[in-house]
Length: 389
Image (cartoon, rainbow, N blue to C red; front, side):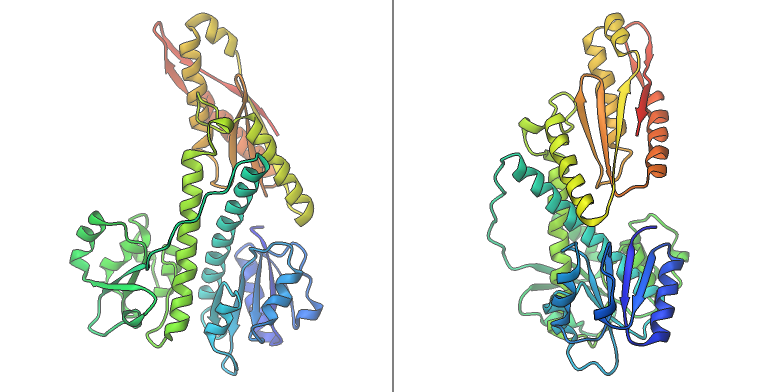
């Protein structure tokens, strides 16, 4: 299962239909008609029918994970404005009558954002545990928004006082992207979107013919889809959510590239070292005990490494270690961690993965490592490894 979803909705028919769709998408799902009878243990996402916005604080106090996304199923008889729910901390506000695929797409998107935020918090905790200072915050300039206009109308984003809004036509988009990084791009399209827009969603990785509906863009790379009647406050909140997610991903990328610093990095491979790995796994174990999660660790050891050093020298031995490190790091998820434990030993730390999947990954890593070749002065080398969960 990919995660446990809680549905709170007094409408039994809608509750049943959404729950069935979620289960068909390989999530675990539980449902209830009110917040008092809900079981919040192990929940990774909440779908809540229209209640008062302050209800979100009541629910969040019951959740073990502060990053757990709460999505509002907005009904036609709702008293409060959609923006009120965003101000109260909702991850998204979805029309209760919309297509079930859109609900699932928005749920998956919110859970991806929560996973990234959770990973940033975890890595920050590891940094503090090692005694390093937090990065200082910098002054945030007015956010730049580019609106790609594919229709003749004026899109709602054109009148947002909190952002610097610039319009751009499709033919100029490529040149603009070369001159500056696009932080936020709003594409103004009709329901029958031109085919040339689709690669912007897909990053040229899928066949445009798979898009049966514009809502499928959410699963193909678009961060959000809104109607032209959206209010400025709601649109501002939606943009801010995705701007925050953009910063979160930037932090994760920077953490992956730079690491903490030389004190927690192996200078040969660039991987985290034993000191960092031990602190990281202790935090993961503590989190797993609190929230009912799991942690697996793969211990990787290169077979016959001493004979490689003896026959070809330490320079070639270092090449083998670096090749194994690169192979391991390139074959895992962003939330996983590879560290050099010492000598020819590595550890792969895997949060929230079943023992069966961890064992499958271990065998796949073993096969990838066994295929490594290093050109020694005399002849090609082939390295192998052993791994155990």
